Amino acid sequence: MNDPVERVVELTVPLTGNEAAARIGEFARKLSRDRVDVHDGSGQARIGSRFAYRMWGATSPGFRRLPFTMKWNIVPGQSGVRVVVTLTSDEGAYAILTRWHFAAYDKKFSEVSDDLRTLLSRSGATS
Image 1 (cartoon, helix red, strand yellow):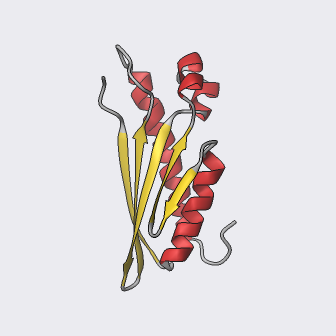
Image 2: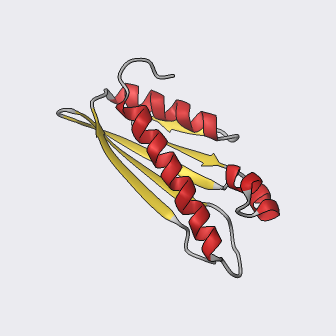
């Protein structure tokens, strides 16, 4: 089996732990068709579809459903909270992975990272 593609996003944001958790949980629910597990200060979501990725690859339909897991941990600090989000590919076993595979995950994880930064930097409403 191949090593998964992984991206870790670390942010310190001027929110309470509950505010950050609510925003991340809502964001994950919008991305995921599966259950989103949220615990006190942490959570996890499975996003995308292995089937869609196997059928469509890194083309537009496959890219929209690129399978990955999103795990997060929120730690209170003096000036807000520290948020650590780990994005890990979940494509399953492949005999050969091409450069397009890695490029697709790099692009998807960059989009998700940027969206998280924007979401957590906003003050006020969560939607």
